[in-house]
Length: 65
Image (cartoon, rainbow, N blue to C red; front, side):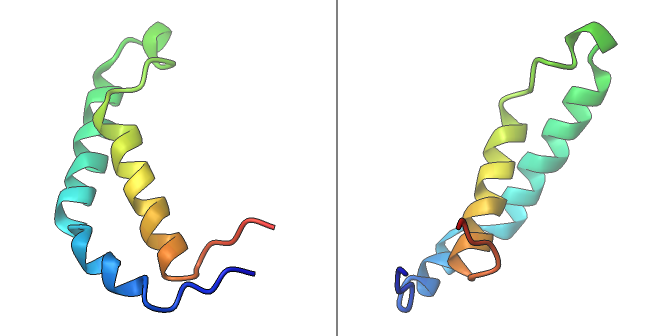
């Protein structure tokens, strides 16, 4: 098991507001796409999702076992 103590200070470096803006703008762009293009994700959406996952992992809320 990996010890993540000391890494939690890095969470402060991830701007939550910008992360949520990435998610929101990506979802808005995705919703505007024609249904036949819904498999094409706007760039902002996976960036926001990745940041949310990183925060969750660093806070110990998500584990991969």
